[in-house]
Length: 422
Image (cartoon, rainbow, N blue to C red; front, side):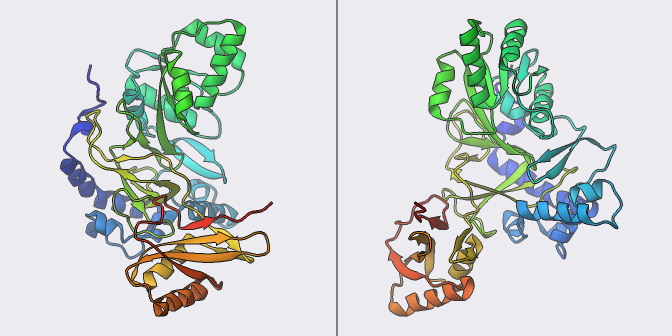
């Protein structure tokens, strides 16, 4: 049996890029035609012109808070008829009957699931983690409200596995069911797997059928990975969201996360839609080719960076470092909100600036803002102009400090709030 889910995972990177860009105009055209909120986001855009990453980068980024606000506005409209358009805020291209299930993520934001096989696209992650046809998967993600349980179940079915819907909680019953059914694989959060195994130890029950796990939904530190490995369980992680499905997954190479095959991922400077060079930390922005719930340049709010080269596992798609923090670094200074987009606006006004980072320090009631700037030009006149731009954009005063070339950390932070609240 192949070690790869399908031939798409090992195609030449140039072929993958060509196929994605060829599919993009049609996907955008369908989204505009069937999802009114996407049509509003892309008003005036000719889908036929969006055939490259450069063209895609010119489209507006859709932020998660905008998705929530649009759904809330639709649901609050007393004059709008009840139905999927009202529930999903115009982002769904399918309605009742076409949607197999509806889920809710915090907000609440409602997401549809259609009957398409492996709708959430996690099958590749399961396969890379060692799950194979003819096995039993023990699924401990929640089956109600959030889509996590369905994400893993539909993926396991696409691989050819049988699924036991364990869900969450009831650890003693989980231990008994695993002992009785002897599943080879676990899906769920890593912390819950540890809880189950510790409960089994407490009860004196051996759960030695478990050999592999695909975990998500929280951090999977090396210490926990090693703890599971000592018990004979190979743990892998996957990265995704309720809006987008799977984004990237871990492989046997253990070097970053490989992107899914049918999405387009950009890493952009926080607060903007501008792609950053490979290796620089920025916000993960995803365009799906999902015909049922199309999202174009959806800002996840997560930070990551592209890793160079191809994975030693043989999969040829781009790799990212994984989750590296949150991109939304909005903070409040002297009663006013300061956003990453405002820092980006200041930088755009001064081409001499290569990189900048706004540091907020002090203690409650005595805030101080310093804009640290990397630039070849370091004269007082430029510093004064930059300070004026900060004041114009944020309505707050900031000191300007010059930073040595490369001195600002590559961690995706545009605003660094180091204030003490003791």
